Length: 406
Image 1: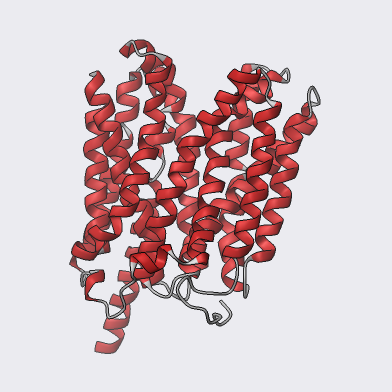
Image 2 (image 1 turned 135 degrees about the vertical axis):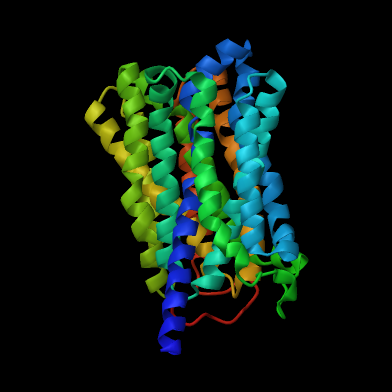
């Protein structure tokens, strides 16, 4: 009887942990993706220039880049569970401060939003590696899909909340704090578990040796290059298709389609990756479909081909981001290594993400044509595929020996 009770308790704790991970993932994008549709209202209300308004979208990415390196250090002292909870609290505070309605609070709050999300971004792969070592693919699929669903949902709900319910941009953005509060209550029981403080592990990863690892750099560059493409297309796809004759309304729907068609590949790719001996074939497939999609943006007035291209880009994006997250766990020997590799990959990755939209827009200003920008994306896709082939090899980042089949 006691054994059965203990088994039931462990099952309940596991289920609660899975629900907690899903709700953490729910909060890793909405506070950012909800801003884009409201940027014109924010700019007008706060009397901001276009350049300053652009900081609202790039500031969280810069916070990601800085905090991604610091998050593993926080987890060493406090443990993953407490660190993620603190990240949620910072996110809630940032959302509240951002909605006060002053210029200074807008940017301070936005930076704090990035800090809070960065902690969750980095430590979720470590938690998955530690708690579900035999289910890395499935758990990565679950939380990355959850993240993307609410990212798309937040983009679509911003205007209805602000205008349909007459909440205005401040309360529309503030509403996402409710989701973070719910997640904090669901995650709270994890604080009663034995703290997974990484500094007590027998195995510790030398930061210097990790940064000298070829595979670690390949995983990092794969994360960075796919981030470059993702944020560049999210920022400019509506403008690109509008330049080919689509209406503003249809251009906006193209962005929504791109995000929603990514969901199946977001979910399925890590599961497939976890079952294969290596992930090279998946990466080549992503690269080929991505290339077809990006090249299709040169289709001119052929709207059918443009729509097919958008679908191909969306499918590739979903597979690329979820595979990048899965590779962090698959190429790591333990949770400590996963946390440090996650910090390295996401720090550099989000620096690339911040550069992408600016570079693509600057090329448009210089050339008054989308062709050079699209050709840059083609080059980035090829580079992503090349480094991805290296990252997909069956090796750990700090081991020369091959892994057993995943």
